[in-house]
Amino acid sequence: MSSCSTMANARLLPDDPVGRSRELIEQGRAAEAALLLQSLIDSGRGGLLARVALVDALVAAGESRPAVDAARDAASLYPNISIAVLALGRALMAADALPPAIAEIQRALRLDADNVEARCQLGLAWLQAGEPEKALEEFDELSAEDAPAELPGRIAEAKAMRSAPRANANYVQHLFDQFSADYDSRMLGQLGYTAPQILRRLAGAVLVAVPERSLTILDLGCGTGLSGAALADLAKHLDGVDLSPAMLAQAKARGLYRNLLAGDIETVEVGRDAYDLVICADTLVYLGDLSRAFAQAHRALKPNGMFLFTTERHDADGFALGPKRRWRHAESYLRAEAERAGFEVAGLLECVPRHEAGEPVAGYAVALRKRETP
Image (cartoon, rainbow, N blue to C red):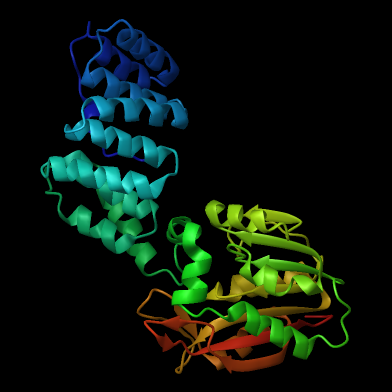
């Protein structure tokens, strides 16, 4: 975990166990530091600084869950002290619990708006969550004299993320981890989500005389399993891939999937020439450049296998980022990328995969067939 910590670089008196613990951390002896600090606290001689230092030692030792527990203890004992709350935020970041981490770091700033370390840490948290604009807003609040040495590199990272031809993977994971609990009701009710049903109808049109439960299917960006459920009648075996562990937990509960993999659809390792059908419902909207996703689907499919997906429609050339941070793709772009990847277009239909603010979102439903020789 990256840190803007100023306290970690502080030097206390040489005979002070807190100062000694920080020296041990910097020497790569974080586990020793944690034992020293825990002993100090257990003896009743450890106050706020010892407890914050213990959190840092446990994080440095890779003990993220004990670090969160120690940080919660500190924050409960010192609920209105900014550095105690910030320690909890740092521990949650180390445990990859970004939504609560960001909330705690923001709380630390409400308690002390001049806490430079909290301001910097919030910027790092937003960067880790794939939110470059929010990260840059926080970094802009830091004066030159307060800025840590790593800040220029972090600003450059945020600017590069902002101009990337796809949504950041951490942003997508953060987004869907937050929405996982009520994702189905939100999508099916509030957003009128029909992409899975559209793909099922498209499959019926392009897959001729396919017996029930005869296909090996890969669901890229499976989410909670809505698309898998829509095509389950065709599946002999159904595998899913998604970035969000929380969404995968919901998909697992459906009992439809043989295997569920946590990973990026562009890079996750799946079987080569292993699937009859690859589906991707409302997931390519988080990618601008589709070349790697198309290549991944092509590798996964058997010869003559089918790749079915939805995306949002772009009425100019190429692809463009829409106002909701979802990418839109032109029909000409989809056809050109399909040809380049070794597919032939078996079907391309205009559709409405979802609604936004009550208005239909224009999209495409596309069926690509893998050519036997690219």
